[in-house]
Length: 79
Image (tube, rainbow, N blue to C red; front, side, top):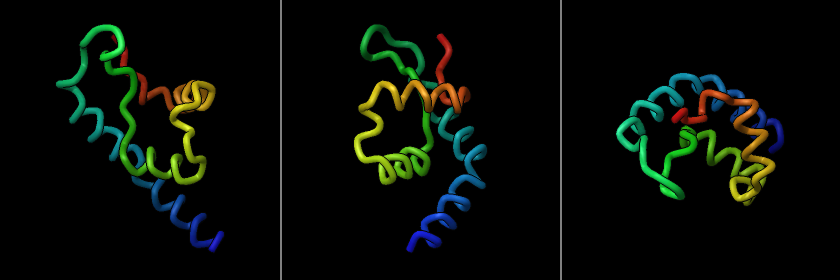
C-alpha cells in the first residue's frame, strides 16, 4: 500500500507545473476583491487533495499554509 501511495505521489507531482498554470489562468478573473474575500493563493485540485489526504485539516493550519507558500511561491497571488 505504501509503495502504491508513493508511486501516486510521483505521478501527481510530475504534472504539477501544467496543472498549476491551468488553475492560475482559470482563477485570473477572481483576482481583486477586498478584505476576507480577496484571493490569496491558487492551488491545483490534485495537490490540494493530496495534502488534505496526507494531513487531514492541514489547510486550516496557518503554519502549514505558510510553509506551503514558502515552498511553492507560484501559488501566492500578488496584489
